[in-house]
Image 1 (cartoon, rainbow, N blue to C red):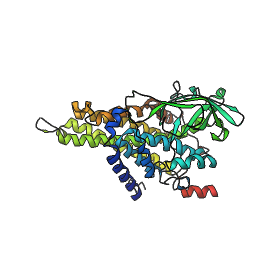
Image 2 (cartoon, rainbow, N blue to C red):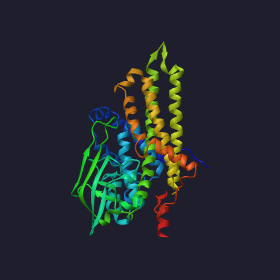
Image 3 (cartoon, helix red, strand yellow):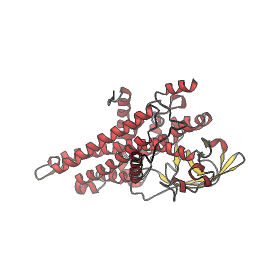
Image 4 (cartoon, rainbow, N blue to C red):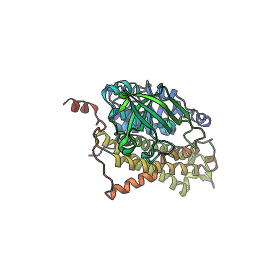
Length: 405
């Protein structure tokens, strides 16, 4: 039977993150957003709470919780601000879970354990100036030279570009093979020839660190190849399943924040002799927010349940990401409308919600890409094959036993 109730452990995590957001993010986020300041101490605090590796097995330094608990963490963080959910999405969803899924034991010991503990921060480098949705158009190359690959190229719109210690980077090892010639590498910030630069003037997520990575003859040890040569594309796509899952979960948190702020304002503000919440068209906007929140959350938890069962969830995660991000964009737009002229000012947080809501309908698969994906599934133009390295099912003890046998 389907169970829509959170476990006691999930309720405890939800309360912990909510309290953390209310005490340490919400009182400061307006200033950080205005200054375009990313506050790295938040990552340290998240590590202290065991949230940088919330769904990484305990044997690799994580908290060993299920994938829907990761969704709960992301929802509550984005209720504060998208910047900090993004940090967890990139560090945990795109990087750490990918190393858990595709890395060998040496790589897990060297990179995954310190990341899960929050001692090191991970990031993800796929997008380039001329390669977004069209991954095959990337220009970064990795040429084998003895015991090293020589990496040259550039990545852009990379979250945590100036703060991450480790980067999962994708490059061509054989461009003639197109998708099948892309490989994945674990890059360390300290490797000579690596540099990063933040992007300024963003519309939203101003409290987040986003920018460019540059590789100038970076010598990468052969043992830093993740998976096999030519597996980079499918590694990237499986990583995006995890990233999109966290983005969708975060969008639920933004919808929730829009609801909370709008309901509060509806009781405070009066027009024509009554609270604005008494006006039916305002009620309509609130009702749309609630419907979007409930539907999005169900889609996210469905994808999370598939992850817990060790089943491929590309189709379900795509739908959750598309719909939740669209609903969040609509909810933030309506929240500004409900606040009227005050919604146009940062005196209230809803204008920040609206600015922040635009990026998620673009990154990790645009709204249009996910629309096409869903249609192709229906038309039988697209079908997902089982991955050679599936994400471990939960509880992780079951996975350990299956590996031993």
